[in-house]
Image (cartoon, rainbow, N blue to C red; front, side, top):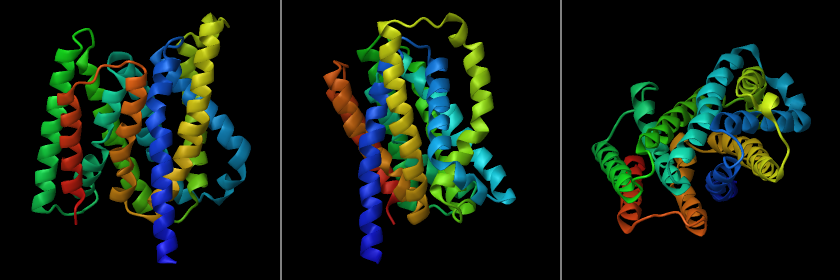
Length: 291
């Protein structure tokens, strides 16, 4: 049984890496015809519709005590990151954004210690410092290599990774006793109304014009919503429930491999020093999660 459970969590991890690693290039393609606000809002809205169609019955398993924590995970783990990443990829390469996202396990460890009562070990503190050094090198070298890009946007994936870290710790501590699908559907029920409001004020409905560019953007955002959000979110929530927060967020070690591959195919610039900085970040993440 333990072997089967261990195999299942590794399978989930690899599938998530492939799906989420492809999400960055899908966002980049969707941004050709849509604004970052519209990309984030449409991603959430299409996901919400998809989940309600396939999993609405799971709502009835959510108890009153769960809703506050579902609200927190919806805001911190879905709502803000959807917009922050869309803006980030408008400003920096998608491959760089994916590497910065690999800070999630580091932030999970830090927030777990500061907010949820976990303790640090010496090598974990060392790992956090190494991860910070790698991030600094990645950002500054990227600014040199791509002077036309605004590397202030690099802060946005870092903020998203902090939101993800809170999300994982809350899931593990307070939402372990309901199904992963129920948590995910609950998240998007909460987000439907604010997302429609955001989409309305983005002028999407007022200025919508169907053409080849818009058709392409809507295709990419639909794939992103159904696979990269609805399916992947449910799978990730289940992974958190059957493993640890640190193991679950270690998917971000693998995401950059897939995202960098797509970025290079799309002719993004990525120097050896940036790849080295990404490797330094992963070393830091490994040390911070080593038992």
